Length: 57
Image 1 (cartoon, rainbow, N blue to C red):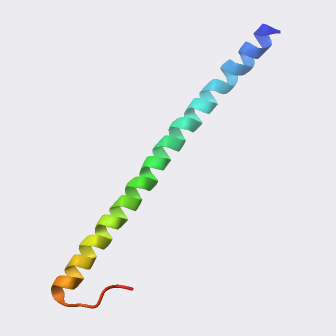
Image 2: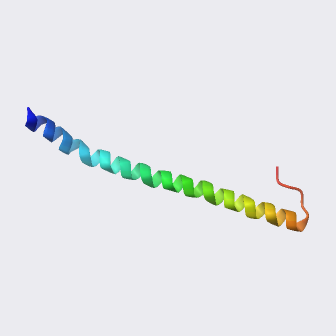
Image 3: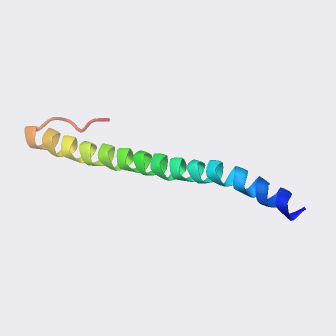
């Protein structure tokens, strides 16, 4: 019976590891995008204030 469980674990381990790597990469992409949008909004607000335009709603 130990051989069956070992086989199951060895069969599932690569799928689980690839899934975890994919999750970490996608999470970092989403966080980077969020931070980039915040930075862009800040720069845009500064430029609008500098030009005397109304803040974007």
